[in-house]
Length: 110
Image 1: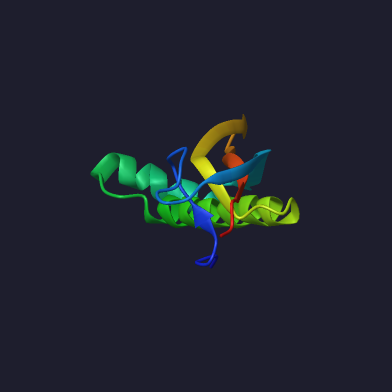
Image 2: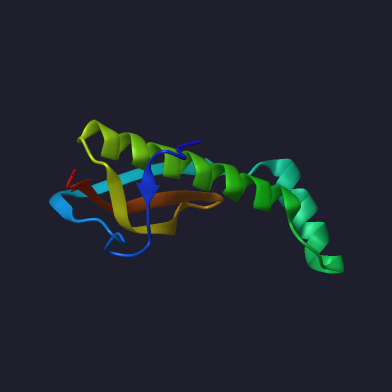
């Protein structure tokens, strides 16, 4: 996906010096569940087990938010993102926002 771009949960990079902090970068997506997933989730609540449809939906949503965050960082001239986090919020009944965010930085070259 974006293997050549550094994204870390820490606030420093080993063996590298931060030249400039470019500020907050973020990417998000809002997703809603569908009727079929809700029906199967209701059945799973009775018998137990993983809600596979929801797991796939969240995985796809996280990947999209992550990619959008990296696009935002690249558009600001960043070399890396530090302090990376995900956040989830309910925006309406059955719909949630997945937010990926961090601090964009330029790494000192040479």
